[in-house]
Length: 112
Image 1 (cartoon, rainbow, N blue to C red):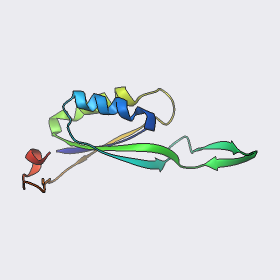
Image 2: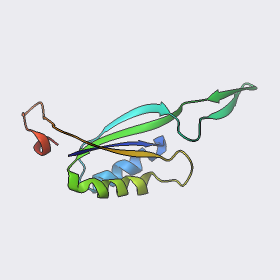
Image 3: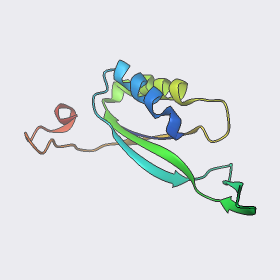
């Protein structure tokens, strides 16, 4: 099993959710997060004063999938989250050693 963590722009959440649902991904965790990458934030004007916004609002999506689905999920997320502009996000893939469905006690892939 693999865990895919994706950081995307907030307005792309529905597009990514729809792309994952089309692949039969039935569960995901979504968090509102803040951060920055190469864009290093940006400056804004508020009541005539300029200030720097260091941390930009982002969405973090986490899904745990079977190993044979990794490439398809990465492709679906990439296509649906891409705007072609800086700050589109990142995808991280890591191994999951064990999973347990608390309600039933199912283990590993059955628990996903």
